[in-house]
Amino acid sequence: MPDKFPRKSLRRLFSVTLAVTAGLAGVALTALPSEAATPTLEQHIGIPAYIPPSSTADWTKLETASSALGFVVANVSNGPGAATADPAWASVISTTHAHGTKVLGYVDSGYFGASSPARKTRLGESTTTAWLVQAEQDVDRWYSLYGSSVDGIFFDDGMNTCGPTSGSTTYADLYARLSQYVHDHHPGSLTVVNPGVAVPQCYEDSADVLLTFEGTATDYLATTRPSQYQTAAWQTDGDPNKFLELVYDTPSASLSAVIARSKQDNAGYIYVTPDTLPNPWDTVPDTSYWNAELTGSQVTDTNTPATPAKPSAASVKGTSLTLSWTSSSVSTVAAYDVYRGTTKLGSVSNFTPNATQFAVTGLTPATAYSFTVKARNYAGGVSAASPALSVTTSAAGTKAPSAPGNAKATGTASTSTQLSWSYPASGNGGAITDFEVYDGTSLLLDVPDTITSVHIGDLTPGSTHSFTVKAVDAGGARSAASTAVSVTTTNPTPITSPAVTFGSTTTTFSASFNLPYGFQHVFVDSDQNATTGYSINGIGAEYMIETSSAAVTLYSHGGAAADWNWTSVATPTVTTATNSTGTTYTWSVPSSTFGAATGLSVVFNGSGAYADYNTTAVSATKS
Image (cartoon, rainbow, N blue to C red; front, side, top):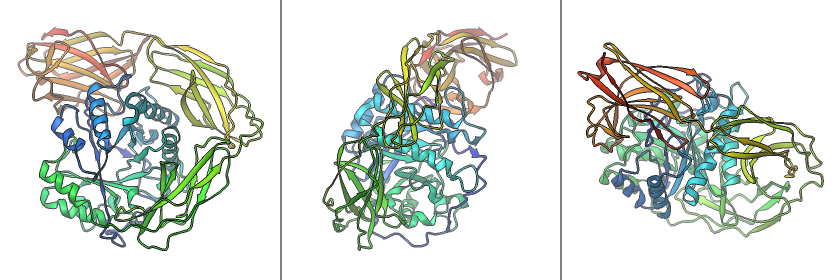
């Protein structure tokens, strides 16, 4: 969702244009699918639940929905949020998961910095490496904070071209790497990538599910859709569980037509809502609409495919192997699901050139595994598991790679440090493929061997760390750890020098934010009455300025004092300046914004990624 409204985020939607996207190169497009999917296609609902936990009625619908609800996406603050779990979010996440619905954590991929203008990470960087590092850290923080209630990851702001140049698959490969990182380190998890439009087939292995439509019912139901939304031929011929379509601004009279069209699109996941911009994902439809949607996505079909034959294994290495099996003769088989023990590893469409092969990675050398395959049809029927194949991976090479050298940390700040190392010699297990970064004994990052320097973020201010790096070769052998690098982060006051000037024509607000918060807020009490407006740190704010790497917006408040209910009213100007401890932000708005107010009380707030921090209220009288 090019942008979303989590609990403490209000951001623009659908306004990012990728400089690299002049079209959908390599996508075979059709005004209507070349062949309608079988009418017995069973679907599940996949909903971006950008809904505050305080919206109990909406969450109750999600927590008690039928099995037609496949997954929900939780978004605390454009990601997992602060360094400690949010109790309200923990409650709705665990309750929904316990009901049997998968809960996916939201992670921003920032178009890997390739959008125009370039999106920046929380540390203010826009390189591919910076976004890869932040995404991996966000993935692990979701599981660290919310544990086994997290069932997968939703990667937002996805690319829609294979790579920056013709013939390149750089972008698709980056998402495949992130997806594999989730699968390897959190087995059994579901991954979703959101380009929001049709994508070329190079993205087929970039995630378990691809979001290929995000738009209005008008565009969705058009005889000829806008070009970016025209269904790719490889989608209509593929595994339906590979595709998710999101359709908003859909009146109840059009609900059945949208669901029928989604079955033509061969979309195994669908979500339809009457909600509209600026945020169509902040509510669940009313009960009658919601129940009709859950029911309409289902089919009645008790047929199950024949059981696949026992798979075989080839190219068995220390950390990987390739499974293969005999193709089913049943034409209604949509895909094959591959399991390691009871953990589902992934699926392969029955209509691809390699429909009966699956590459298994993330294995441990000299370890026994059991693999089975199940066939799945369009109606959701799943065969019995094939006979199990037992495989023992190869031992790691007798000579592991040399340990990375020259490990050092520079530029250590309150929440980050730049860690670098030199490329070591490989052992006899094969060429080096990855570097693993550890914080003590905990794996922190897994990056390709082309990266020998990472800007590690999300560290706790005033904390001590011992970083090491290991090299991993193609045979799965790991080097000894590099020399340990000890780092102690600084611990500044989060926000300093708050100031307000309430002039006759212009009002300025300024403060130094000394932690790289995801959001910088200015809450303004214009009537200086703490009982009206949004209640925060002793004031009642009628207005709020929110700044992130994506946008700066002035909002007015509505609803009760505890409601996070804001309406965009203007775009203030903002300037930034780096100082010795952080960044000074200065905002300017017309004083007429505040009507007849003669004084202002202001609280500056930092949120996202770290514990929220509020300044003591600063007051100013109009001059």
